[in-house]
Image 1 (cartoon, helix red, strand yellow):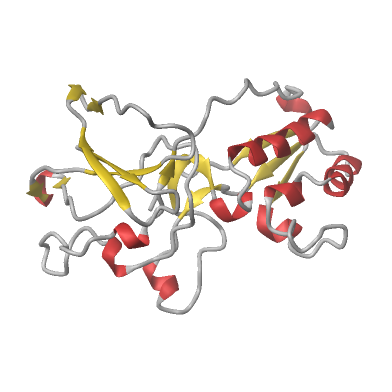
Image 2 (cartoon, helix red, strand yellow):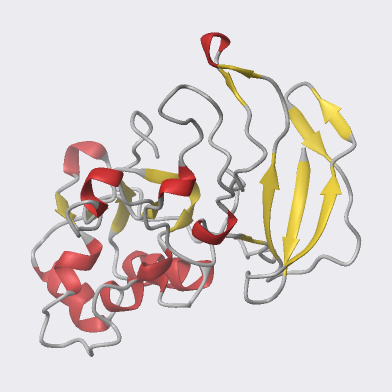
Length: 236
């Protein structure tokens, strides 16, 4: 297991550090000098034995599944394939075509939501990008972002509907699928996640995890809960 560190733009690899410790399936190590904003990924070495579920391929840069932030979105590229058409390991290095995880600082404890009883809950389900894309009260910069969804005009509109909770269609970081890329399309709905702890980077518009949390706080301040649609059964 190797920890790969990248420069501030996520383009040049600075170091590969082996993780020397292991407890069960958890690998660990200590890398001094790393601070918030550090870009990183992993390369994992091991057997290639698909019949036993082993598809280790160190040519592929892997995301930290527990990353709290990613530095870019994840459009499809053939180098992301782990396996070739003949069942052999795909030799193409994927580093140029996958996001980097970002080290984040410690965030303050979030506020608790209104905790509306389930029997009294009235849900409004929406797609973050679609709902904010054409609203006349938003600027072009706010459209399709958490800043737009948390804007006062949007929160006031939803509150006036008489709902108690907003349910967001997938907002986690997600990838495009190969069949969409072949048609010149991208993943709109988000049902192809690459990480369950990081928001989709375009939704943050460069704001980082704090931007998502600020949106949640605005809904809580208005007495509205926020529920997330989590997709465990078909990840990227």
